[in-house]
Amino acid sequence: MKELHYLNKYFIKYKYHFLFGILTTIVSQIFSLFTPKLISKSFKAIEEHSLHLASNVVQKELFHNLLLIVITALAAGLLSFMMRQTLIVMSRHIEFDLKNEVFRQYENLSQNFYKQNRTGDLMNRISEDVSKVRMYVGPAVMYSINTFIRFAIVIAYMYDVSPRLTLYTLLPLPILSYAIFKLSTQINKRSTIFQQYLSKISSFTQEVFSGVRVIKAYSLEAQYQKNLDDLSEESKIKSMSLARVQSLFGPLMLALIGVSNLVVIYFGGMMYIEGKIDNIGIIAEFILYVNMLTWPVASLGWVSSMVQEAEASQKRINEFLKIQPDIVNTIKEHSVIKGEIVFDKVTFTYDDTNITALQEVSFTVKKGETLAILGKTGSGKSTILSLISRLYDIDNGSILVDEISIKNINLYDLRNSIGIVPQDAFLFSDSIKNNIKFGKENATDEEVIEASKKAIVHNNIMGFTNQYETILGERGITLSGGQKQRVSIARAIIKNPEILLLDDCLSAVDTETEEAILNNLLQFCKDKTTIIVSHRVSSAKNADKIIILEDGKVLQQGSHNQLVNQEGYYKELYLKQLSEKDFVE
Image (cartoon, rainbow, N blue to C red; front, side):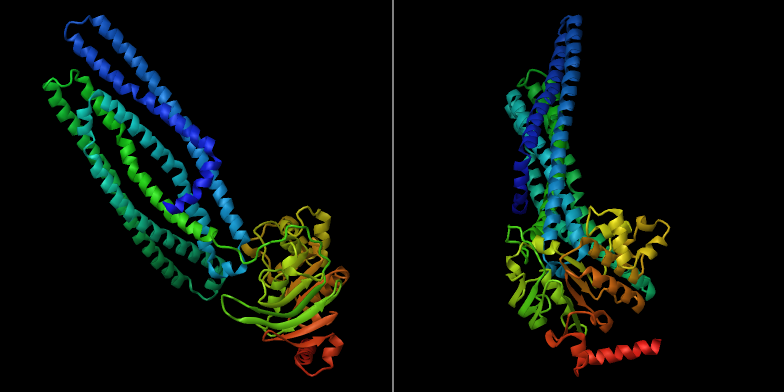
């Protein structure tokens, strides 16, 4: 139960719901206990009638008892309804809060976390696992309270009527308790394994759906179907193993309750014959008490199962909630970003791969300047942009923004001042307009259109049936690669950031469109700090500064005119791309 202690803060938060639920449960149980007493009195009246008590007196008492049974049953039902409304609603509030807490933690966790964990597993923890926990804070808690209170009140009533018969009636309970303990242990083990397989299936199917075009292109449908069948079969085996243990609870509970009924009838009958109880209605009363305990006793198995499953799920949730983000905003004061960036002997190694992406890299970009970064694949170009956005912290050296260490700048102000167009343009399953407005939520339609024109995507959008209201498929699958890149550029432009980072974002457009976008960006970025990562000289030639990276080190540095007149990577790339352009023309 130690993993579930984490939820205590929510019980404290909703203490009034919790306490009111307990109160209504107590009152409900008191009302429900009137029925056995009234039935016992009715039996006694009938028994006395056989001893020549006036018939009209008996009828009057029976009618009176019947009326009270109906009234108390209705009162108990109404209070039970209020109990469910209070405690189940509380569980929904806790589910809402816990999902938000998990989601906030997901947002705060750093890039390394997402490299090490699969999306399907993350989704399973915030959906399936949180739902299992809700069953604990709702139905499990409600039935536990109900069972405890009912046991306490019913046994007190039974003891008051006949201590000896009460003892006989409760004899099967120790057997029940031991059986629950043994079965709960097995449920906990099997539930944990089953949840792990659910995560595996979620991760597998999520990857298949995301990469379905590749699977179809390589005709691998049959292979992936077989892989899913194998994984589903393993999951089914674990699920059936769990179900077999859980299925033992119901029959076991009913059998023990049946034994208790037989005990009441036998020993109660013997005590009545021996004159140790003076009213045969007491036997009927005890049978009703035992049957009142039937559902609470039977629910012990269900509750125990829910608690075990919830603990397994909460353990998986706690694993993530306890992770401390690598990047933490320690500066609460507001930071005003102008845009000057300095890298001073920056060295950075990725933790997950142990690859040193940058080695003592130094450069300066002043506000209003444009820096172009070129180099082979894996040379560290995109890493520089990630470090400027502080998605990672460096190992050695320093990064200064406006002559202040990047660690001493408010993280949210820093990122709000940056507009980034990633190498892999990501668009949401929403309208094109809303995807562009992601950079500025309160943007007007005119601003959206203006940003689209600068990104040379307006005419493409107007060619769609629903134009800017066109709903995109997952990850923007509705659009071509070049259109996705240009919508991403429009999203960055509409933000009007102080720092603009372009990560090879024109690779999917033709050279003519690229030239038009770059000319628009040249005007747009006159007073902004701009860093362009590219494999094309055409994207870099108008930059104020150009650096060439190789194996994480600065190989060359200078302007286009300087580098094109130097022997080295840049000149070779320039001549190669120039000859390719002439060949195409």
